[in-house]
Image 1: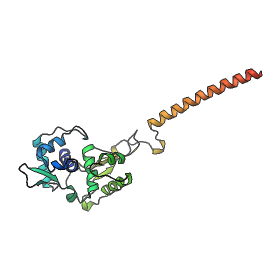
Image 2 (image 1 turned 30 degrees about the vertical axis):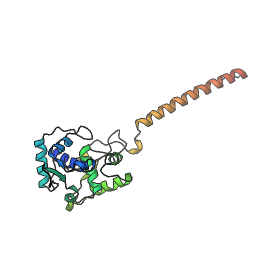
Image 3 (image 1 turned 120 degrees about the vertical axis):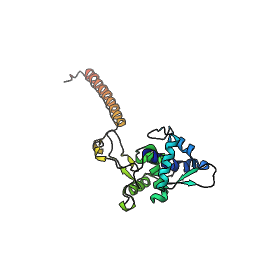
Length: 220
């Protein structure tokens, strides 16, 4: 399969998402797809595509067998065929759609964001399907996701989809080793602990000085 444009990937992601979140309105009309593509929430980046542009994206996806027209409706409606076309289970399709719609995500973010598409039992389950997508053999089209280096200031590494082409991972900024990483919350806690210890030390000094004075002992 060729590399998808941003809008083509967005159209595919919207169709996958809406099949689960608005099943009564699915398959989608062109108007509904356009609204889904231009949605302001749960989208990264936010787009402002025209219906004609979305139609072009749909037609391109139809040629790749990723989308097809639904029958039995006066208004032309469309549904995705990602699972069959890509040879993926529903869990992988859900994760892929979430990455397409929301941009790079950590494993924990993905589990939460994809809950309406598929409810994963735990984080290890999410990681398992991501690893399968990343290790997809070349004869099946190659990897569909990649694990990005942990960014400076981040606690977890993020994952990104590859439907829009390869990502130059080597060019991305990389955080220091996890052992050297201290979160801002941990720094605040350490500062609070240090302040408390300083107060206790001041109280102990005052106590020692008072005892010395009472006993007539000089403090050297």
